[in-house]
Length: 66
Image (cartoon, rainbow, N blue to C red; front, side, top):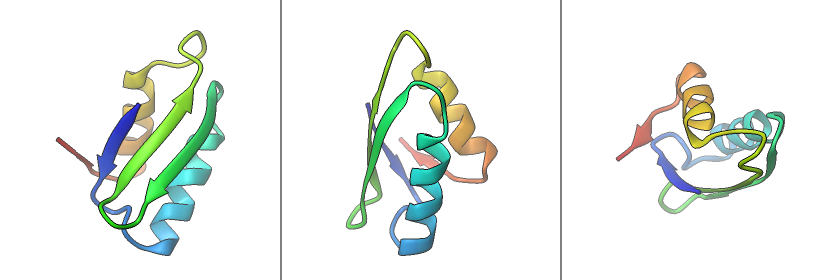
């Protein structure tokens, strides 16, 4: 799964995003590209859905770009 997060372009938000995501059950890895805010998420579809991942990101005040 690949999404873009507006705030994922500096060190502090990136660390927060990676921690937030990796604490969720079913997420194996979250890699953030500081150049454009791209977040690549490796997860187990049997444990978590894309919708739950996106909701968690938005609940923490982060903006997903379309």
